[in-house]
Length: 369
Image (cartoon, rainbow, N blue to C red; front, top):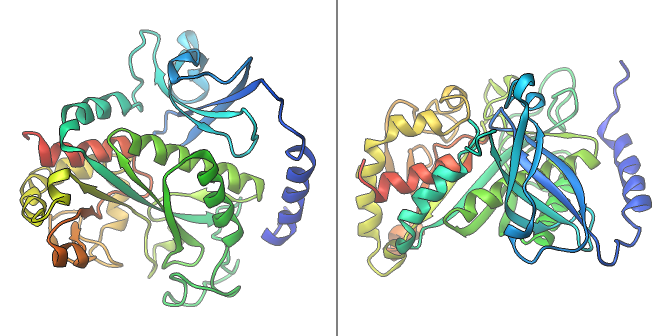
């Protein structure tokens, strides 16, 4: 099979964008793209419908349906599953009145499907809403060709060792910046709280940060940011891997996580360091339970990453410390100095479900366990 390299696909993608998306959007009608999580608990699906005008509120978007037997969420004899809109965002791809609509997936009895963890997360966030819970999540990912080979890696052999790639500048060490910057701009257009982005330790690996978000909004925004990233990469003819440790990176290469920052109003107030340190007791008690939900495969993915090497803690033991990236929970040095702020949970894998992670963090700290 002939291999199409990264460079030959970029101009083709740009020509398509210029020709079709350069057309003016319809002045009144809304193209609503419904987005949902499929049966893997990791991948996203979408389909689009036309609406006469932009709905004023999320409840004005109609409940829709889809073939769950084609997404790993139903059997063919009872395949219809429901899409219930929960959040909408301006569509950076179609522009105009178009909207991206994040949806819950529901079974034939209108109950959450097996990979729909939003409802359970919302219940936790509602219970702790008076604490004003703030979250930020740092999504690491690897840009790969359609054959799964990391961008910038030689097809035979390996790139130079880690060291020159983190926050790097230069064509010999920063691979795929066009994709990163397009995603950043698209998220801003969509109203996503994208905090920033940077090149990561492994070549072809990048990170973007979403937050600050309060409560359930954290999970909603990270899922939509992931969808936008995959759509952007699709236009460049490449793919995005959020596998925490792809097989080709099993050597001396950093894996990918989704570090999660958390604080309450008490933690952010003067002297809040006491509340931050007190939170460690609850996080320690739920460590093993957390490890089972911090990746979509019951903790198996994280076992490849959390080895105690490459800036990770051990999956078996809970630990915390100031400015220590080898701990389960890191208290940033500035937080320790100012005696207020937030904590960083470094355990979630890059392919985690943010609803499960944020619910676990919040419940471990603020609810009885």
